[in-house]
Each structure stands twice: as C-alpha cells, then as structure tokens.
Image (tube, rainbow, N blue to C red; front, side):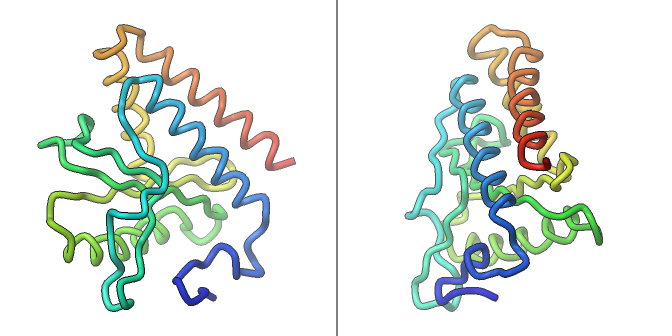
Length: 169
C-alpha cells in the first residue's frame, strides 16, 4: 500500500519500525563511510529525479554522489538503500523492482545519472551491488586518504554488525 506520494514505508502494516530504524542507521553508516573516504555525497536529495507519469512527484534516493569517482565516466549516481526479509529471494526481487522504478525516472532525466540499488536483508546478507559499492569506497579511501582498505572495511562492517545485532534482538 502506497500513500499519494508513492511511499510504501509509512503505510505498510507488515513493515516494522525496526526495519525503518535499521535502514536509517545503515544509511548513516554509509554516509559516514563515504565522508571518511573523501567522497562528496548528498543524503536524500530532492531535486534529482521526477517520477514518470506522476504529475511531477519527485523520487527521493537515499544517496546522490555527483561526478561519482566510483563509477566509469564519473557519472552522477543515485543509490537507494533497502532492507528486506531474507525469505522468498527478497534481495533479488527488491533489487529488480528498484532498478525498474529508478530507470524509468532516469530515462526522463538528462541521461547523465545512473542508479545503483544498495540492499541488505534483516540478517546481514548484502545485495548484488552492495559489496562492490563498499569495496569501491574502501579503494577510493586508500587512494585519497592513504589509509589501508581494511581501515574503511573494518569500520563499516563493525558498525553494520552492531546495527544488526541491536535491531535483531
């Protein structure tokens, strides 16, 4: 069930407060990781994408990295974070759904923006693009800051394990 803006989270009786809390904590950990690696990232930008066929309603990704140094051609990149239950191939199906949703909006944008879904299940499994995203941040951090990749990876995964341990109790 979506509200009139297409937002599912606030209206779903099957959705728990825990999943939304976990989403927000993971987003904060990702933003901290990006900042520590020296990557300019904007949280929940409202002026990037418009939903197709929805009277100008906006699509708000979780992260925008303008001129993204982590992707080929330094394209603007939007990331949408999601947390799903591990049953029924949740990560795979939600990834496909997110790609479809965002690619429709990107097609009517200027074409210089790409979308990458960032998924986690409730028990900590990472979505298909998530591990690569985190590894790329660590590599960039090594290049730009001189810290070992393990510094960034350990920092993020320690935060992540703390989030999952506290939210799954």
